[in-house]
Length: 406
Image 1: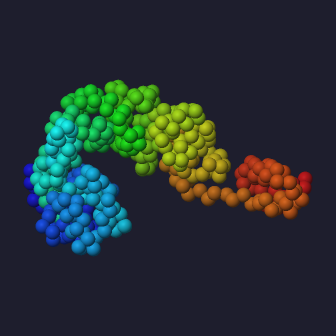
Image 2: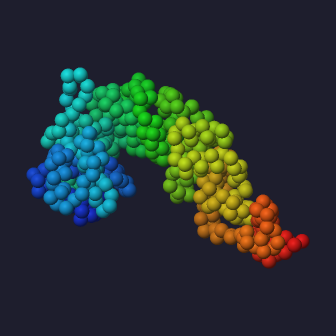
Image 3: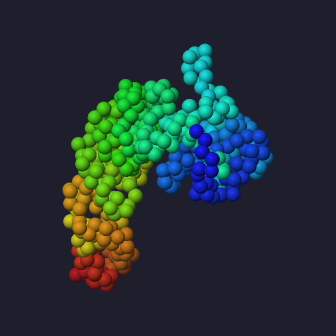
């Protein structure tokens, strides 16, 4: 399906360097189009997408075209026919058109082509196989626009064939359904995902985890995760959650407060782990150090909703644990405890705007007061700090130092 002048490209292409990329390809006799997320999300009225391109030039031809026009290329996926082009200090990916061929070993392979419909047939979902050129002309080979408007998420061709090309497509199917699905889940696609779910075991855990994280921040995550659990899609590394209702409450709280969804918060609410379980989940999913620190701290530090609802207590927790921790913990506990404060948005705003007190005593002050042993200096600081906190941060430096003499 060809739709001339269908998209307003000014909302997508707002860089002269992107226009330069189009010109570079065309100057070498090729064609380049946006594909996938940028086109799909623009059609759906979304923003904040990455730009991905497709071209009928081979990677070598594309690199030559860019070099001749002053654009830098970097290798990002040459084995899969993808070239990185540096645009405004970011790397955008340009995939050369491909079509599938059978090798003597009967394994799927590909060759470069100038056939756009053949390239579209290699993509996973109909809504991801829509292309657009610089003039807003749209090329839709598998009724992706219709499916997007109707909220239908389905594979291109035979679902099992598409999944066997990359088993991670099982997770992508659920993620895109949770984001764009309006109609009931495609039965053929779901059955194929269930039948081939063991294929996920052969995928690097980091890739599965990243898709799970993206899924967790989609609009219909609760119902989608229910389907995933009911069909044991991820049972080989994640147990079934008993707290889907709490996840739903969290998504509603975040939406009402106009906060962005946070995959780590949602995962925590799903499992509500103790310290040992939080450590185990962090290890299984190979969290970054920062992710692990946040996840395990939420489990270790017990704070209830009413604690953060009190202005006096709230400032103490902000001082101890930081603003981000308090915001996360408030949303988490409100969802888990079914205890949403009536003034939740005000509390969140107060946390963001809080002026964090600064402890007025330093180690040298303790030394000047006559305490010189390292252990005693540290212990004295801790005692003074607790006195200061208990006074609601009202004790002055002189009052604290005088308490040493007393």
